[in-house]
Amino acid sequence: MPALPAWPPKSAPRLFVPDELGTGRIVALDGPQAHYLGKVMRVREGDTVILCDDLTGEWAAQVSNIGKREVVLEVIERLRLRESVPDLWLCPALLKKDRFDLVLEKATELGVASIQPLITRRCVADKLNMGRARTIATEAAEQCARTALPALVGPVKLDALLAEWPEGRALFFADENGGEPAAAAFAAQTGPAAILTGPEGGFDDAERAAIRAHPCARPIALGPRILRGETAAIAALAVWMAQAGDW
Image (tube, rainbow, N blue to C red; front, side, top):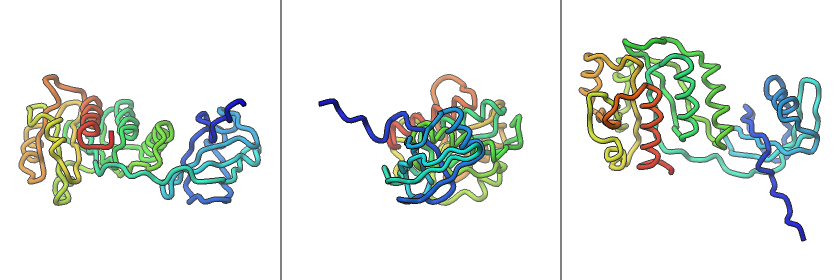
């Protein structure tokens, strides 16, 4: 007897939607999401689509109607509850657009809970298109099968971040001048934490001194080489997840 095909199929498209999901609910998608399902994935009536709402988890839905500008789905059943991710923030200094896009994408894939962009004196960029940034993070979450989107807030200046830093959250500072080896520091951490990485030109002396003077700061080293801003952020997150995260 032939084996039954897996359901839902692994090839089913995945999308985050803004409204809370539940069994039997009708979801009408338009705009880019309808174009993606109808024109790119070429779904047909009866096909399965995986939906997430960043509230209740992951759901299987069935396409009930395909229009010129809209795709209508019926939610069938919940597949997974919304996941719990490690309480880790990433605080990366803004980089050139394509390089910061990479940070947003890979930080989401690696499982970070929150992303707080920073503006420092040597930042090449001082603005971030938040709509575009959220789209990048959402698409990365869809690709890697996350059921929880990372929190993403607008850029703040470094001095404001330090002044408002929450007591009890360790601030691991990736300092090109050196510090405790990252793997050992992360393995010893048991509470909430964050990783701070710099811009293309690095932190200046005054910024470095201010960070090191903060009571929650813990300077760390990411090896013997000076890393690009995007490499430092991605590498630090990978080491964290291997030592203290959910890997």
